[in-house]
Image 1 (tube, rainbow, N blue to C red):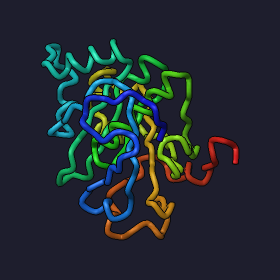
Image 2: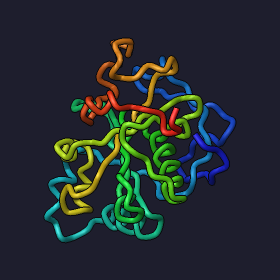
Image 3: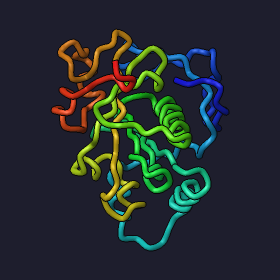
Length: 220
């Protein structure tokens, strides 16, 4: 995770302090040092993960919708979170990166929402500077000392996970990358060593055949 970024207004520790992921299970496996994140809009909580899809045909905007549209116009993107519920783990995702930078939107599943917010913000800052993340590549600059994998997400997963993306783009004509992280031991969710008690924490939305093509972004 890059440092020296302006702190956002989400009340997290600054660089040098320890941010422990306190997810129901995942806190046992991953502790991270949080860094300052660059300033873009604060997270918006979506109580019902399916509600945004139902809003696609609505012409009137509520205050939250207006903020999303305004944030994309002003900052280039907006980050939303969906809390863990009976349907699955919590997650956070971007809306606006494709419109502003012609770059796929980003989704992170299973992390503490505030931490996922920081990571997506940092990814967004790198995209703003011209970086292009690609599917089936491992990146070392998202989390310190860990390699995160980007994978294309098929459109059939959009309705369940990125309802406000469908609403904003008026359909599914936008790309989406899932950022997949390992445990502190470097185990990924497709590997047999992935802990059994968090088996459902980070579902892989993309085609698992992409994993066979995985390589380091730096060419290693």
